[in-house]
Length: 221
Image 1: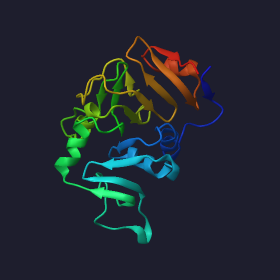
Image 2 (image 1 turned 90 degrees about the vertical axis):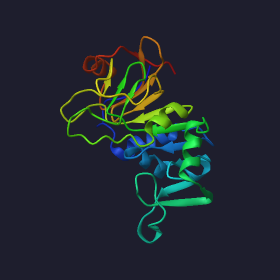
Image 3 (image 1 turned 180 degrees about the vertical axis):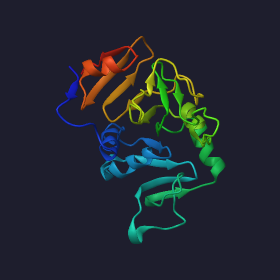
Image 4 (image 1 turned 30 degrees about the horizontal axis):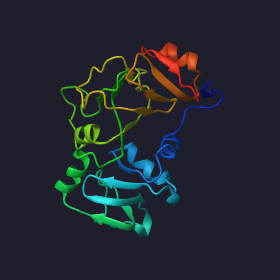
């Protein structure tokens, strides 16, 4: 049986980041996408050995910088101040993208507007006429990283699910997503007929099935 924490509220933003951080393999090279994914770096214990990459040209990024630790010249791809860990290195933007495109990253964490049941990713444009497209390095990461984890809320503010049978927004990449971490559940994309549910918060597996137009199955331990 999957772990169902239906007696509590859905996860908050920091809790979502912490849950994802615990599942990053020890010693992995990881890129954290702009927005909420960057908060994952604040929940990686020093002993994890995880090396964080940021596409503006840095390896060995540490947690977010605060107070006197802020250096205006030391920022992540989202332009937020970060710290550096011992052994950190800096390089040209082109070299950074060569790392992303060349299969040198073990994992990337991206946000999303939609993810399909087959793992298609839509995270750069809503298709609205007045929306500002913001692809950044998402396409490069989605096809270049060995694994893609998505961190997002499961439903929009109006209650529409973001995990769908087929994406209706412009696609970033096809069949690239491996796992989806949301405020109410963790999903695993298998490439088969069903999406696996690994854990839930504030919702039961039965209710999750009733609210999503996606075939779901409980992941086995």
